[in-house]
Length: 75
Figure (cartoon, rainbow, N blue to C red):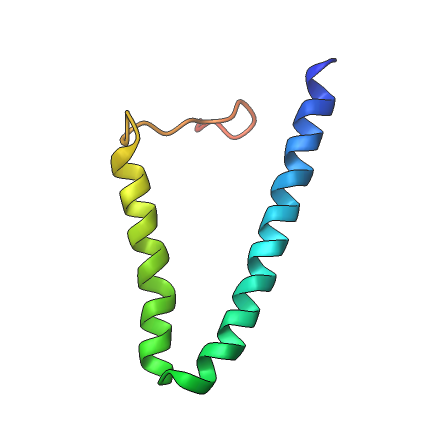
């Protein structure tokens, strides 16, 4: 029972992080639409995070391993 508050706290922090990230993204989109052509902006918006994600996955110790939760483990 002691793990439940820690899991709840972590979930709330993740939700707040995603909300903050989405809000900042919206502001950057509003700013970028004025100065950058739309197609270039869309390409940058999706390519840069993808590059960071690929780099992060390659730097992990075991990039091919996926950690499954007990509740959503494949059948």
